[in-house]
Amino acid sequence: MWRSIASNAMTFLIVALFVLGGVILWGRGQYEGPGPLADAICVQVERGTNFRRVSRNLEEEGAVTSASIFRMGADYAGKTAELKAGSWLIEPGASMEEIVDVVTRGGASTCGTEVVYRIGVNRLSAQVRELDPATNRFVEVVEFQPGVEDTPEEYNEVKEAQDTRYRIALAEGVTSWQVVTALRGMDVLRGAVEEIPPEGALAPDSYEVRTGDARADVLAQMAEQQELWVSAAWESRDPDLPLESPEELLTLASIIEKETGVAEEREQVASVFVNRLNRGMRLQTDPTVIYGITKGQGVLGRGLRRSELRAATPWNTYVIEGLPPTPIANPGRASLMAAAQPAETPYVFFVADGTGGHAFAETLEEHNQNVARWREIEAERASETDGG
Image (tube, rainbow, N blue to C red):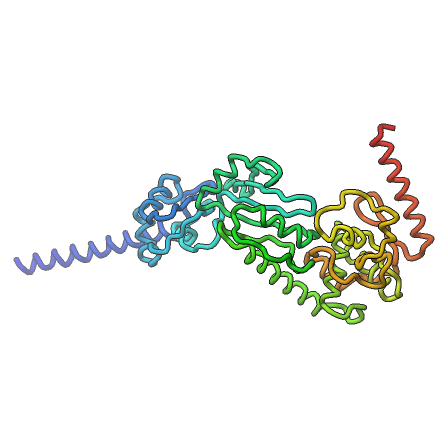
């Protein structure tokens, strides 16, 4: 009898182990296999929440088939204590294992609301936008000019949210004064800026910031990035450039930046200035004259007068020889590389061609013809504006 009971118990144990093993294999397949989510979603993890609540939300959203299996898998992986607050994009078909990695990895939120402060040459704007999980593209909610227009209610609302991300997008060609003025107008930052950074010292790039970040720290990050770009451009420069230092390269790049907004012709514009420097010709570029007038504090907003073209300032390249003493703006990486590696051309002149780009010339005669064409275009546009 006892032998029969022991045999039955052993059989039961073996069957139970097989069943348990099957359940474990099934659960593992559920945890590691493709999930049921058909469309991407944005999952918000509030500060102070726990894995149980997150797992329930994911089950309700249809991202996981079982909140219990999701929690057990995370617990087995030792990640239940690593939950990170934020807004996280969950891709279609993501497995439970992949979702656990997303909500415990940390870093900047990957979806939700973002405020982008765009520091441009002509204005500062703030754009509130949200990521549409279905298209993985941002949709604008509202845009305004801080300090100029009334603050929209949508902006005040997103500032109260814990997971709102903030980014500063710095355009090529802005001056250091413009950058500092813009940073002072951003109410998510703190702290005073004692001095305007040297012209050209700040890298036009995109920067993630957090509420309460110090303005001085943001400027230091911009300066550090520009140092890296200038150093890389200087190290890769053509050996026969008529430039003596990285500072001169930075100055030339700033002139290139202000002379053209067409990416494809930066190297050609650079070649004109390099050819002029090599021949001992004055650079004769209008943006340097403008900088001598404004010192980078705002936009001139009108055409140059003949008297201003002749006026002696340290930056007026119609008057001075060679490069001005400082950059005239903050150039981007592409302009730095154009200054370091200009195209090989015979050009020493260029003028606007009416398309947004320039017409280049090797001789004064060719240049005068290009100028005449540009004057005709200007006259036609003026006539159209006047209704003639």
